[in-house]
Length: 266
Image (cartoon, rainbow, N blue to C red):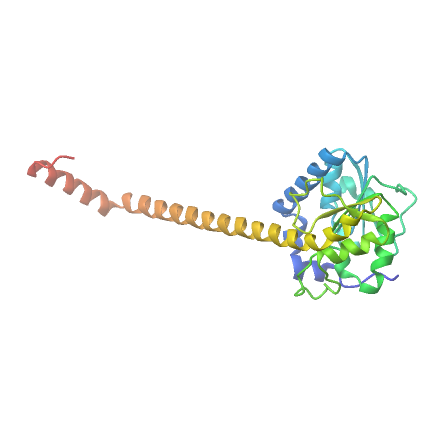
């Protein structure tokens, strides 16, 4: 399959902002939180991040002790991987993943974060076969409701992807805490199916909405707090400016003198 041509510098600049995405401290810390959380719970010795972009998550796994690798279709993004980790990334893409000889052929964990919505729906099964062929455990995430992004041509609810993974014998593991990630994070594992599993898929959509609502409320409250804090800082700064003004000091002295002469207590 030929590489897409719309994930070069123009895409990153217009959609994410090159500096904002590649060097944003918040994004880097978020990926470290995700990697640290998964390393503590899953202890993966080897990890492959499919669609790694500039390698934030791959580097975070390496910083937390895992032997991590990354692949991406964008040579531009790969050029921005941290220098010390650039040897651990390669150009490859779903659904036809071809790994270099220097990469392991199997992994304790494969991650595919916000990637599959960018490929055509006709390749879904082949893409999932590629992911599951590399590991018995797949961390998967795909936006279920962002239709505004022009490159999102394959958007589906969480339950849809659960059903797709079930076709190849992979089911959600609800025992792992994925809270550092977005609400659409699902950890799929290869295991036998049970009747309750199919009923779980629809509830995954409800769970997504609950998590998303909670995150939105938290973000709204944080924004209100920051605004209030900013208002207080502005008022304090204004008060300090007024109090340091010569006219204020003269008026204050006159007030104290008047109060003293009139017998008012301070």
